[in-house]
Each structure stands twice: as C-alpha cells, then as structure tokens.
Amino acid sequence: MLCGDKVLKRIHSEFVKTVKISVIRGLLDDLLQQKVFSTDDKYSVMETGKIKTDMARFLIDMVIRKGERASRIMIESMMKRDPDLCPTLGLIASPAGVGELLP
Image 1 (cartoon, one colour):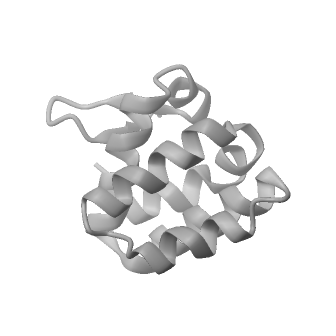
Image 2 (cartoon, helix red, strand yellow):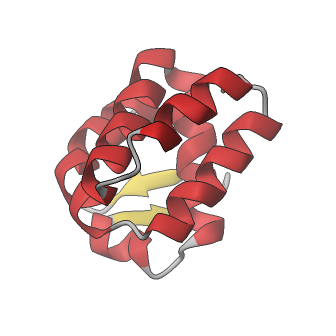
Image 3 (cartoon, helix red, strand yellow):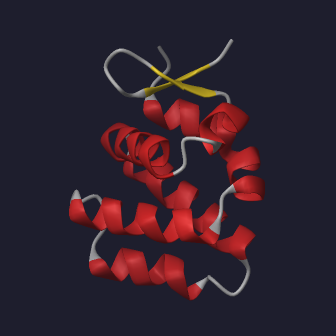
C-alpha cells in the first residue's frame, strides 16, 4: 500500500478538477476536528475559495505538507464524504478503511 501523502500526490490533479466545494468544506471541518488543521489553517484555505480549484489545490497541498497522518485522515474523510468521487480518483477502501489506489 502506498503512503497517504504519495496517494494524495498521485490523485492531486484529478482531485483539484473534480472535488465539490461542499466536500472541501466538510474535509476542512474533519481536519480541524482531528487536530490536523488549526482554525487559522482552515480559514487560510477558505480565503482562497473564490475559485474552487484554487481552494482544492491549496487544501491538498497543505495536507501533503503536513505528512502521512494528515494525508490518511484526509483520504478517510474523502471516502466518507464523497464515496462517488473516490473511484473517479482511483481510490478504493482497504480492509483497514484507508484508501488505496486502484492499479
């Protein structure tokens, strides 16, 4: 299985193009609740929100920079919040519940 940050790097472009704004907001809430993001981090992403793709790009880049734990939490949250998006991104649920990439 690939590391979470490597998974996010691989799906980066497709995520930025296809994620919905409502999912981005939900991911921000989840990342804040899991103490991956501070309130300032959340608002930094939201301030880029005039253009959805900029907001999505800023979010995924910030999570990748925060490392493996943050990346896994984001992947798990994506799978819960938008299960239809995950196959589009090539993500499947693993037995542990963490996303894996389809071959």
